[in-house]
Image 1: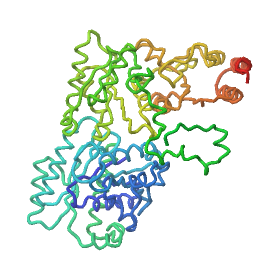
Image 2: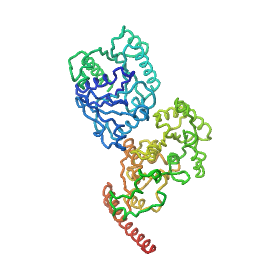
Image 3: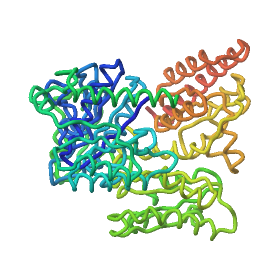
Length: 254
Length: 318
């Protein structure tokens, strides 16, 4: 099973990359789960035609009880992808990190993996590894590998460096390891050089190079990924290549 | 509401759900008695809470990692002979904000082990609600403790805020105390009773029924006096769960060690209890001789219990 966590600076395109990667895996015939770990709960919206799934924390807050089945807190989106959002507290209140932990415990109790039997699980995680809750997706049993999304912008690279250091700090025999970088281009001057320089200094591979493209915005406005909207376009093809590469690596490891 | 209020079960049933008295509608009062108060297990009451239960492994010690206020009532357990087995790592605000307590735990573990004139069989790291919000991976911390001391280290979670959740602390601690069991050859004529931290009464009919069904050895955690006896628990052919709080631990043993479990429900009507024993007997893969012996003994126990109940009722003049 491929289990990936996607981290990166806020607003850098983590959810876009995650959803497109999920769609690419699904279009290659894989059973995919995408779990958004962000209080904004918008990770999977473009797999669901623009209609968001009820986040787990919203379900528990509104009903004051835990769900008893996966169906109550998930929706099936493009390509049969099972979409789940942890959600979180009202901004300024509560603890979003605890929300992730609670959701993960619940999914374990509901035997998500045993019942759905996924080939691929993707965790789309808010921003940096800021507390124990946001490190939960890289614990034993969850993600095996981390992909860091960054552009050539200074603050995005700064965040990527922090994430890489944080994951390395946890790097013992059971935690996830950083697989590489998704370069999500933002039309920054000398962008490729800057990202490559960072990748080299951190000893990381650039796993994918996603061009800046109006297609992404066009299809997101329609509640779709580019994989769904125009699978032949260059952006979609880059995600397909990344998915194929990760599948090949997983098969080689098996 | 200032006056004491009571209602009998029959009266309540007659009124129906829609006419439940206001006195029983807990959300309509500022002060009410929640289900948690019924479950509350004060160390002063000498019951088994997470801390005392966490020491069920023979020869183990516990490091309680908590703000001072959370640990203070543990002192009451000293009266029960635990004073040599509890150790404390007190947290302050800076520890919690920076997470520095996590680096202190392995050092504290080492200090505890070095201070003893014997090597404990295990160290239980008991951590409280404050850490639930931090999301610490205690399994990882425990591995670091093991690296530091060479002593098996297990987490126990005293998360009161999960008391009414699907996996409450007392179910979690049961998994913790059985977690050091390792796979070994299982013996078909041996079983465990799982459920409580004190053993079943010596004269309980369960022993007699199990023996008459061909079970030669019935083990319980609470009867283990040495770590060797503890490890023999994983020889069991099956586990008999008599308290639902042990179900999670039994499921873990089934998953890890391949020991299946059968759960008995607590019942109070004699015919229901008898029927449950009959159903249990039907599932035993035993030779017909022992199975029929068990069935006969079950019937004898039923008759004997019915006679006892009649005596009590006569005595109570009911």
